[in-house]
Length: 509
Image (tube, rainbow, N blue to C red):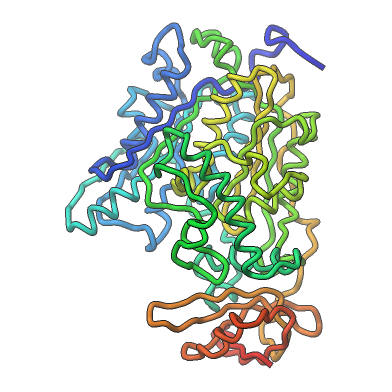
């Protein structure tokens, strides 16, 4: 049923501004400077009659997506940091917010926080919310390689709601047995999908490359993409190997200088600030939920929660996937795309555009903030198609934390103050984890080459009693890893040796 904007409650939350920024060449700009510029662009994008200064003064909440450099040693740098990222942006744009939020980790955060703020605005708990984030990892690494000292330090005394790291999405056994990199996790998920599809390794790699070629083509036409040009399937396959399935051009690229921002408020506030209705984007479907740890999922190649989240978003909007014109499926790894696309019945051969930006391997993977760019594109592209619906899906961890939203120029009368958006994981079927396995068979595996010409493997195994475990080859056991490359070991028996510190080593047979 159609509804006019004039018939909606003043408390109805809407998106009114979006901004992006990219610096393709390395320079000295900090991530907070990039985020601030994206925020400036988002404010300008509102086209408010009162001007940018009026919008900035009205902002009562600034939320910044957690930087990768604040997540751990892999991305930590020596350039210094802001101890209050929202206040860094506030100082730059002339805002004095009552609330400064620094999110948890995870690529779901921009979409998840949008859900949080939609509810808060509808309930009158927040007025004008600025969401922003950025990464300057390209600048950081360039400075480190060239032994240049950059000082991005900023100190503020303002109160900060720092939400920390968030729930860990891995079991202790997974971490102790080599699953200390998301590439390995996604390779296990990808491998399980390959086996279910009945494809050889080479057939599956080509299918991934053909899908990703279509993403690269979109990125090539996006002025905010970090990387110029497009990649053909053959070039994607020829890139340096990351695992037995993935080449370097198949996965998210974090060496970027990119920022994005969104501005949200109520209809009543938009009218008060003089933001034209032509800039308004309505929220039609919102949902989020968390998945089980990878080892505990009955089917390693599937995240049931990912499907439940997109289904709930569509049901709330009262539409089907056939009504979605614009879609951006989170694309950190190919299986993240295919797991959602297959559930929705969308082709995964590259014949349908499944990204609005070009995706994390080609547009760029600005840490936890990628989906802010996807949301910005959804705002802009939906404005140009009055009858269209745009869907953005996001995930954090290892297909662990999911969030989805549906957006349109069409007015929406959904009461976000009371609409349930969270899906509980309590009802998900779960496998038990075996702490001290003696033997079992391989459910999924991943093999990685080292710099010395050797290789090591990690498996998810299952005991005869149906309990799961994670195991790896011993440090000097190259033979087992190379044997797994020569012949698909899925379903093969393994002998297991467990130690007191949860380290579990396997051999074939």
